[in-house]
Image 1: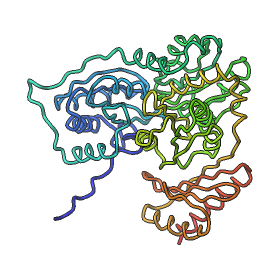
Image 2: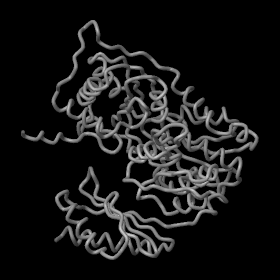
Image 3: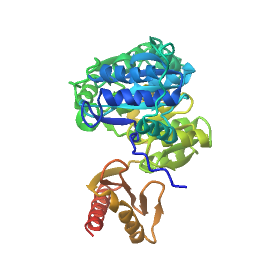
Image 4: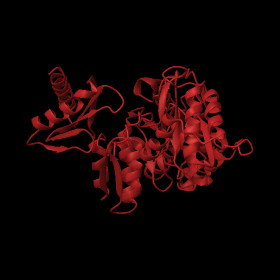
Length: 456
């Protein structure tokens, strides 16, 4: 028997993305993708978008494809990605579709598929959709069975109510907290202020109007993009500040002193306090996360499992192994008692809960050991990636290594992680140490090593 040819991959780690009206991210692509998804899902499908200017164009095309296969399309409008995922989870539907490019620049957009349980679609299911897409073997409903679009107006209220059911609302209200929130002109503008009001939190907003041009700042919540929030927190006597990315599945925090907290800090703080609630709890995170997370979990007598990079991977290991909490170092936190996906509003609510009970965010941050991470990337042709990994593994003989995702090499004073990109011709090099100079040294040393092997 002749083996099937490999089907060209469309889905990356977070859906299909591209520049609008080029690189394939146009109406024709969205229509075919909708037909492929509808052929696979078969039933009612929820759809939502972030605030990008191309949202209605791509949603309409994708919805048309879904309806052509006979699917009923439940349109949730502009919503954060986790809001749509929660609606799918609670809605007894065949799946969901989110039109979003998350933190990418405004000229990008994308299409993400959601499984019926509200999780980001598994790779096996994505591959099934890719096969249908490339083969063109679409279901075409008879004219009497073509689907229709029905507005779905309850997603946001149901989502807010769900978050309030898993945090201590009374404690948050008693604490009389005051926060600053930057919605990044994204979908969270329609959700997070409402959540804060319902929780009895006083707040000031920045960039809280949905605008696909992102006039406030780019939607990636990096330090250079949140200067206004940092200055506001420093000047305004806030308990803390926080910023969402474009589709609000991630949240980055600024403590009460105005310090920007990288995502591994909020991951560590939440992990510590969730594990303190019950001894022996399990936290799941990726090999790229800071040792601060493991330190925080061990301090609370919990356990850690490391996975390959990617929030869907983390979520599924949590489901399989009984992890109560997990996430990535980019501010994407996953709460098993709510839903198995990165959730920006839920992260904000949990930090409110913790601060209300335990005190200032700056003190909670300072109690967890500090590390310094560095990240670099360098060009590497796809054909050379395995060669690079093999030679680096040989050179690391005698050191403790982890091959869960790429190659992670541990040293007495830190570690370095070397990962080939799955979608680009680059190699990523991460390092970490309590000594910033050693972190710099490791990342530069191994960047040169990769470049030397690539050059042959």
